[in-house]
Picture 1: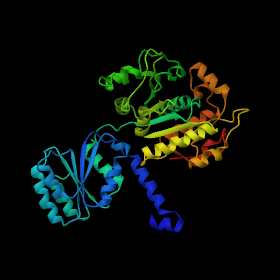
Picture 2: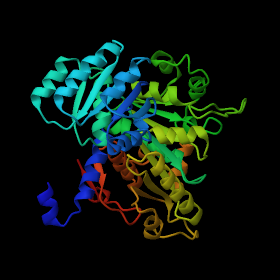
Picture 3: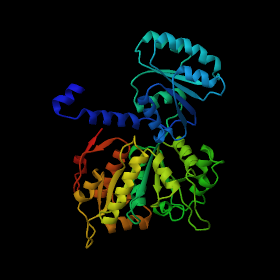
Picture 4: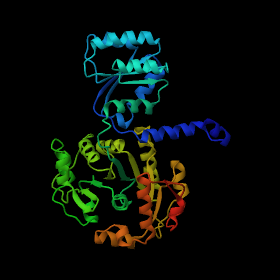
Length: 426
């Protein structure tokens, strides 16, 4: 790999970053566990501390302690042990094995132990496993290596995989974020026959029930206001069927109460939804509160919808910059430019809009009041209204991209019928 990079003039750091991002993309959130890491080197301590900023570690309680296994033995002689102890060992293997016997005397029976060492010895590995060590990592250890090692200890390999969560949010009100979210959810469910849950998080003014011509008696409000009741069975009662493979958590149709939530109000709902369906599409309202910030920080993918004007450019940049800091080990949010080419409206060109963001648009959707208006008034999706429309093909390609079945190459103009030439199917 390195030789190829050198010969082709490609920056090896870019390849390493891309590989790390791909590795992180496969990792799932860790359960609620306590972790204490004993670090002999500053480098490892800094790397483990940086894990606290990763969304997959949100539910864990992570603490680093300066020192090695001797420090751990001294500490736990007078205090309870956490769910996982991580030990860095830079000394001789013989000393490590001797101190592990001391540690075993002060450890709770349920505590797991992982060791990070610098001796790549299969005999040492087998001896550590024989002594009950859960994982041995050969340093230097990267962030994906560390999180993956913890997941291998605490995530049941026989359990059902967690579903993927995709959040859609508008850079400004009225940019069509909800409409795009609903069409993408419908496209994923119909094209791939995959079970999809669409959650309308705009409890006050959500439109998912209108766009799908539904009037369910209950929905997402019951899930959020009674998290102690929410499980797989209760969730099934709240879901409204929109299509063969698409179910919806609808927002209430009235303003009989206010919807002021704390940061973790949607956490239980997201956990249950992830266990219930392979894909969950979240229609997040255009607002910046503790709970919207928490939701956008924790999902697998964020899609920002904007129209090509100056307020949208400012808001999009603020969103991307903020989410990049909140999600340091994840891909940048995707950008969809909507309502492009509206008659008589001054617009920023696509290139001028994307350049300060340092990203390219995943999709560019032209303004078509007739098509979108007809679909909305009839409670149907774009592909149901006119399957041959170029915009219907755009939503089809978006379904491929958001589920990892295709990747974006480049797109410069809206309304092109040859969108397949812009995408590389995987």
